[in-house]
Length: 405
Picture 1 (cartoon, rainbow, N blue to C red):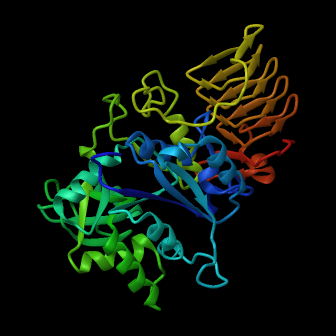
Picture 2 (cartoon, rainbow, N blue to C red; picture 1 turned 120 degrees about the vertical axis):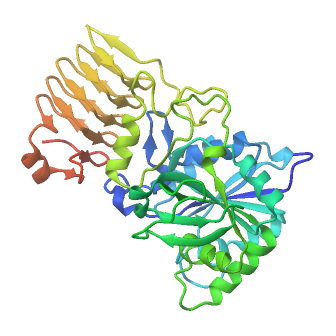
Picture 3 (cartoon, rainbow, N blue to C red; picture 1 turned 180 degrees about the vertical axis):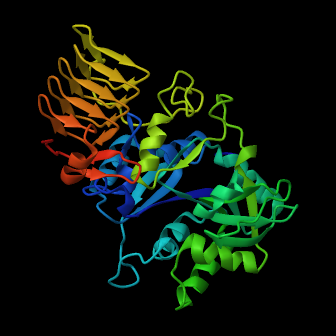
């Protein structure tokens, strides 16, 4: 846009998502449905587009068909104005090999950078649930003159060991970048909290290109952005931290301001859904000033018949709740709950069918799962473990198209 710096967005969307299996058995992690209407990729793309960044390459690799289809059918911008969001599969431009890490993915795709010739490059992950205005991070990056700026979210120090952690001085320069340290460094202004890396970076293009070439030549590197490239730039004094707490998103509520979740496991995926359904949600999907954009299927509104009810729940278009009860749950589009059924604390994806008198508690049901009449899921823990996937937190998960017993 006129007056704005020339920025290219690169979204890393090639991860397998093994810890989300069976939800990733047939799709890439960023393509996993979320929140009744969306896919995980929609959150990062919405943040970038809402901020005015409309030249975006999405690097894909594993089981990417549904992800590619979603991007190409949903995220269509104006080619006349030079706008694009395009999925880029592993092209094997440097030989017959897949990406060996997130840094290698960008290195093998540098033709995209050379073609666009941006001043700055935003490199964001594709599997987090949050709202953010990345233009504010870009502005700080330009103002400080850093080579790379890393987004950091404040977390209690006792919880920070689960993340990559950022040590910074009072000027915001990063002094250390540690992967899951036993003793996380405190922030300059509060020793009781630590900066956890959000996996979101802004680079000055020239520095990123040179860093990727250096990383590629390093045989001891795992070619990972957070594990190798960022620490290398920290060592030469080129890295700065961006405090996510300073990001102001239009329309945010006091309750959901600063919300960010890495939904890398079945339990965090489940917990993030439960954040959506309270009267005053921890994460508010209803912010129309900074919307989360997605494809809306051509379905009629949800319908409740014969006394069917849903309390503290999200119910997607085309769903029918007939003489059944739904509590504290997220139902996607085209879900049918039949007479006498009871669904509580659960996540149901598109096309799920719950039969008469069935009970579903604390469960994740992937697309087109069928729960027969009278079946019970999430009631008998031992039986559930024999039949289905059960997370460490006790959430029962049925994969795409499964038929419950």
